[in-house]
Amino acid sequence: MSSFPTLSAAIWIPILFGVVLLAFGNDRHPAMVRGLALIGALLGLAVTVPLFTDFDRASAALQFVEKAPWIEALSVNYHLGVDGLSVWFVLLTAIITVIVVIAGWEVIEDKVAQYMASFLILSGLMIGVFSALDGLLFYVFFEATLIPMYIIIGVWGGPNRVYAAFKFFLYTLLGSLLMLVALIYLYMQSGSFSILDWHVLPLSMNEQVLIFLAFLLAFAVKVPMWPVHTWLPDAHVEAPTGGSVVLAAIMLKLGAYGFLRFSLPITPDASHELSSMMIVLSLVAVVYIGLVAMVQTDMKKLVAYSSIAHMGFVTLGFFIFNQLGVQGAIVQMISHGFVSGAMFLCIGVMYDRLHSRKIADYGGVVNTMPKFAALFMLFSMANAGLPATSGFIGEFLVILGAVQFNFWIGLIAATALIWGAAYSLWMYKRVIFGAVANENVAKMKDVNRREFWMLMAMALLVLGMGIFPKPVTDMTEASIDALLKHVAVSKIK
Image 1: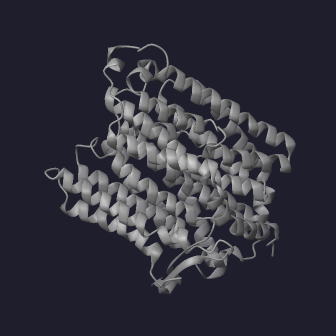
Image 2: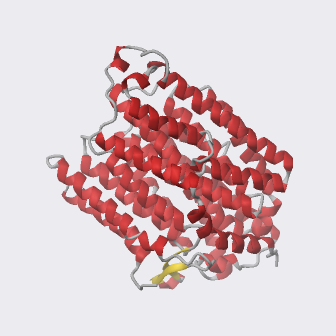
Image 3: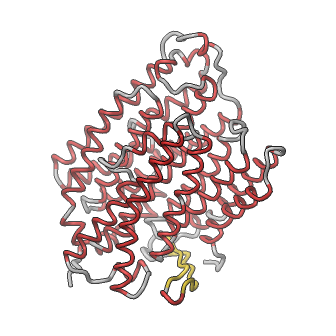
């Protein structure tokens, strides 16, 4: 394995390009700004290729590790590394960043440099979250992601953007403050900020429960789990298309990843003790939020609620403590990144033409946009969990794992396939099929070349992962085995 700092490059190249755009970019040269942003995103993706090609799939050990002293007085290190639990999220972030830059290519005309820079900096910070092996470094990256997303919603969002941005910022910041308390407590107990040292730290049950609850508040808001989910529909509705794509595809995964890296390995006994609560909360998200999605009149709100329901599968998979469940949860996270990202891109394509997200304003779109209708059909089916799409694999594995754990839990979780099909296909039918609803729809033009290839790239990812999920499952298997063995061993001192 080469000594090239792959993870540092993946983090800092997009951030560097973002800073350059902020410093020198202006609206007088939008083509140059867009070109530079695309180069930054593509370079950021290119340096992550070794994470896929050189990754040792048989090993559960951390790979591509980099370590340098940062704040020596507190034994804080700039410590990076990935294993099977995190490597795919770095790749997902890099891929989605390229798509988002292309998505905003002709659409954003105001403050183009600042828009592109926000996404590039956000991309680097999110990769930092997935790579950090030092608790304080993780916290810095985790909190820093709020700033670009706050700006993206607050500057380029819809009419209620300030309210949505403020609500998003406040919810996530308040949740994270308790996590900081837990991190400081773990440092006091271990004398180190190394996450790996915390994994082997013996803690009493009371300590574990309190630390678990502190982490839960931070990560549950980010996922978002029911009942702290109410910021997400507002943020999605007001965010620009690119903001919605990044929010759904990657930012929701930061909280779910936190459970894998912090909650389960640091507090295994508390995780088992409180698993019933986590399973109930997850099933409420899967069933109740699925029903809430069915009554939405705004397309973005419907997809936002479907995201909450799909992320309910993820937390369910984690807390049934078997290989199928955790494997399915990780596959679901990656798949959801592609599928929900593609759904928001499709809604963005229609919004650019009609400037409306209301389902009632559409109808008969297939008559004027046949290529778009075909691609939107694929993504709607994937959102409903159709076999041969990536949406099916994760849900199927989690349901199998849940049935192994408890048949009734598996049965309740499986109803999500019915709700998913109901809200996805009902929305598709009302928007796409039937006679042309009005003269505005009659004037809509089919996808242009940029939109077609952007959606086609997402379609290939959704189908590729649905038909051949082996690369994902192979890279995660050893790390999942190691995690489950670790969580099965009591750490009570």
